Length: 290
Image 1 (cartoon, rainbow, N blue to C red):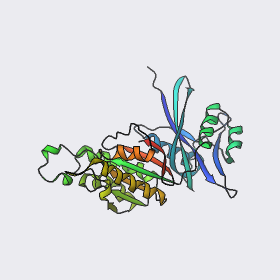
Image 2: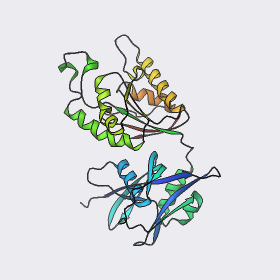
Image 3: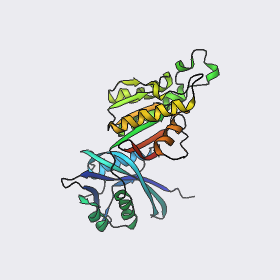
Image 4: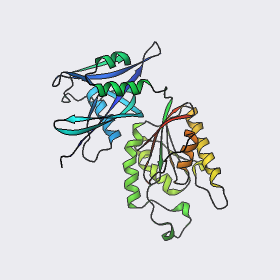
């Protein structure tokens, strides 16, 4: 079986003085086309990391991912190809690689970009971006990594540390957390939650703030109380426009996301997994599973 091609990219945007936005297109002389910046995933690379890397290399833009957009699927060089896209807010320049086959970059209003792109699937991705409400902040919400078996730990459960697998998950989460450029790191009280943010804290030079509102229920405590507390804390952070990364627990995250989204959904979160959240004020616009 011929292996499918995986790629990732973004609709990179920046505000303009008239209150609108411009988006970025790149020109590839090899194909004579105008397209969204994108590129193939490297071996073992997360698609979100690949998207940010390719945007930097092709469009010379440092960008913060916000909302997952529709993926594009088509045939390329006789193989099936899937390109995952995110809306991405440009926050600076840098990273351009001259060997990326790009010889020109243009910033255009969305309708101008739709008219210029060479492929219908790019126009569809741009149309999905244009339909998004304005995003005021992004947040990374993760569940702690693996921490062995509860019954094999003789001390208080909140003192149970990450095991080898959990540390591997924590180090894998760190570059994803770095992508959103958080200004704060918040953790539930248990040691395994704090440790899950340790690699990101070291990379970013940020302290980890312990917040009991993110904890699972203790004995005698109603689960709904913890869900409400966590959802309220996340909404408060979002309303303040703070870009944060948060580590919580498996009995809290699904209910908190349902409260924020205002609807039921499959928000079960694996240990060492998480979500990229996009907000408009305190309203959750999108939750993208990492």
